[in-house]
Length: 517
Image (cartoon, rainbow, N blue to C red; front, side, top):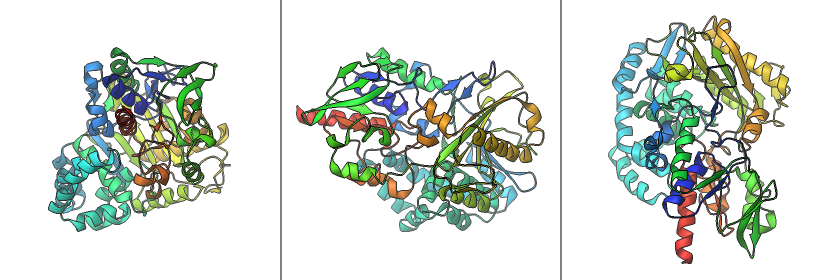
């Protein structure tokens, strides 16, 4: 295994379960990839360095089948799942109890609560098969066999049409008031879909309904605890993990993988390499182009990364002073004044413009897990997408150069903090310390986050399913070079902590070994 991110560790677990000798080589000093936590912001505060909430981890069989709770993992939930302030102190709030969510929506606009419950019932019928289908190797034959009749029972082509509808249009079609529309659109904004694009509707429904059914859970003690459970399980069964071991080349002999070489000159012989690394690093860098199928090399010339990211962590001396703060604190809070503003902002990012009013995803981690900081304080973060370094056409506020050096990142963090202050007056007075991680800082801490891209490549339809990462691979983990498998978020089904890309790669390697035998 090259890389000890969640996909790599899931693959390592499945292979060691199958009796393989497994060696995991990780470039960083700490395993976890984008599932790590630290205490560097302020003493006694735990901050998740990258990802924080994990609905896909508790919905994906790739992770749930590993029974990580037996290896020290404990999930925690905030009192409410997600909140979105809007208007003059109003809140759209998502709860794990659908009736509580519906009641809140109905109080804001009569009739939207009933529509919400109908959407939940539709999800009950199609959701499990849809999640299994999206996280299975392509084509998802078994999940598809369950999904097709489920769709037929819930409206057939009309349901399919709705899922294919851009989320901004879908929200208007289903709901009359703004609150439910904000929930759907805000959750779609977790990926890099423009909200008026096809594919955004199904992703918005997926994330919203996962929040409704399984919540947005967090590992007790920090994201690192999810990684530690994955490591504990595979190493207890015989896998070996080596950190500070950056792989610099995959060695090829006689047309198939022969081993890997690390930066310190160490070589490891193997018959299979599963690469939990970005496709941009694997194809043409770790593996020379002359060893790759020509169609893969051609496809990578058109491979598109997702946007960059700026993430800010704060240590706060008290709870976030939201205006009209909900009685049950949401773990996640989205910040955008309206669906229209959100649509404009995400379209700006997609077109290379740094937004003046960025759409923020924020996390109240102590509200979600009281172990994250001392009582009465809050471990808090926010992130937002920005154009990739070198791809910025202009800044809507004429402050950011687009090179995303230190000054750019700090100015943009000030812009993000001002957005929070507008919804939580006095926020700045509570700040004990803050940390700003721009695109370059994120990549320095995790090489897979190229230019701050957190999803291993755009999630838009032209690079999903059979097109991911390139059409030549047809959505499979096999790369066309015998013994080499892509096991990162660059592979189907893409970004998110679900472990499916690693599981798919492990299954492909096992299948090919059985064929050879």
